[in-house]
Length: 284
Image (cartoon, rainbow, N blue to C red; front, side, top):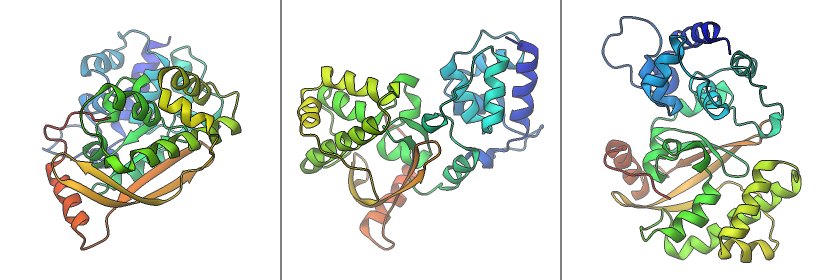
């Protein structure tokens, strides 16, 4: 592990980014350009102390998951992401079709959707990035441990283990379940050797009788743009247009939710923006 080179690279990447470029409010006057260390730590889901130690060339060796989170937080290109992995002595991911590295351009689009819930997910349900509005709507998924950010897994396991109300109206739960399974089956068939979707299928067949029943039905579907209803504990039910923008190279999707102008849902969505993340715990 090249600690000195890693520290210098992290400092330079941090210095070239401004708060507005990553969806953060600039706040008070800054003495130095770029993001603060605690802001990078927040974006990467790590402690400020851990990140500070990395920049001071005295931190422990980061895991592959941590490197992926740092690359995302610092908006690294694919080549820069690979260099980051090499500095730590890790082989960078080579299968770009299932990469967890979100392209900087896609992240910039996400950052600018400040008043619209949006998130980037893989085609098999791994949430890779959220804006604040998406976290307010469906829960702070990026705040969970790296291995607990899959919306399909959460749908079938968290819902069964909790008495808390879900994010969808009860009468629409069955349809969401069918769509999750049908979409996962299409991905599983397209990439049978991909350990991500294959492992998720094996896990849920064992853990969820509901999933196993739907899997046997052998329905196949690909997620498209649609209309969804969300139930929120503070602002109530909203009917939102769900647009799915595909990034075929990385098997990633930018999911954007909007409300029709002038509608009651638009008023509630604006209220959600004002309420933000206040007192809202992660939801399944």
